[in-house]
Length: 227
Image (cartoon, rainbow, N blue to C red; front, side, top):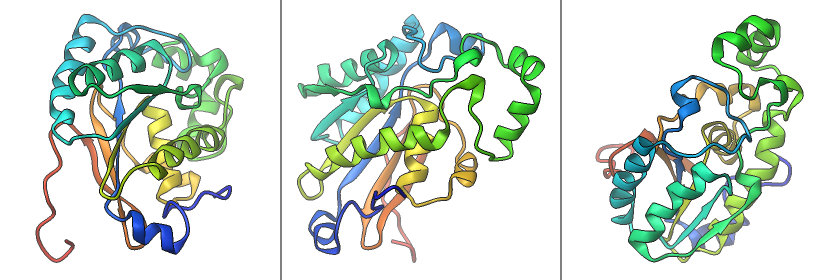
């Protein structure tokens, strides 16, 4: 866990901070998304459709009354965050630690090209083995840089406060896995995020819980025995 508490701090601070919420929001559509090209840390802009996605989602997320917005500094994430900032008036904090996984030689390749050229590496990654895709970062290294940033901003929230994190699919998945305390080989069990959809973590008595995943509508209260 690299010293990161899934509860966001000591037992006392967890009790004080219960009710905090983290919304992890993936950026809108890009041309490379449509072409199924691995983007990684390549700085690709949103398409017109991606801007429209961000605008629609921002109107929904604004109704959650977020207290803070932190975003990757890559153009696709920054532009997505900008739509929410425009609706809410909240300043955006940018952090390069929230960038997508650097994947070296994989970046710019289509899915088919990756499988053809790096089939063994791709298969090992899908099995949950630690793989430097294209000579790039390990997923655990992505979590090492991104999760502390998310927790740092979450720790500054008021009780029952909401943080919106605007980032990338792979980085969001590894961050969720780390904050939930899952072993890294199980992070792939968290399905991917659709463009401009989000996942929601809520803080409870035993730490962070996954409340919503790959959502495109506002979270609903949980009614029933698991409330």
